[in-house]
Image (cartoon, rainbow, N blue to C red; front, side, top):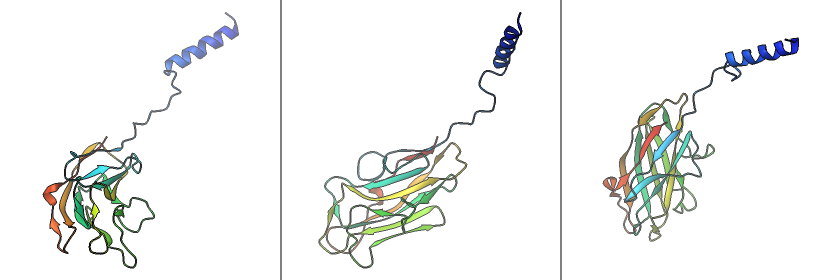
Length: 187
């Protein structure tokens, strides 16, 4: 056996003994926020795929076909822990992004706040009487961020309150029973 043959044999033996994987430990797969949309009836928060990432979940509020209105007010609650309410875009000034309504000039009729770190309070209204909109299109967006380190779990998410401003009048109508969220998990 030549020294070249001995070198090759030792190299192959060395590779086989360490598994040939170059050593080191493999890191576990990255976890992400997984959201299953609720049934397509009534008002519902659905995943906005173009705006969402594995750790930034963006939800659009969508209404049923045929409904018209001039605004929404709602409170959503998420369990404290691996997720937290976030701005849709980091440079946003609110935790709510208007899509449908014209907030008008001057003071916009768009407000949001986080209460006790787990509840998002949001108001999104159209300025001017008689300017009602079809509620079947996306109305507004909210977002949740995964908090490191993410661990696999089901995350309770719920609608605490949901009200509509109808096409006519200035009184909000309670529609909490007609609004749904899907299921949120970290996988």
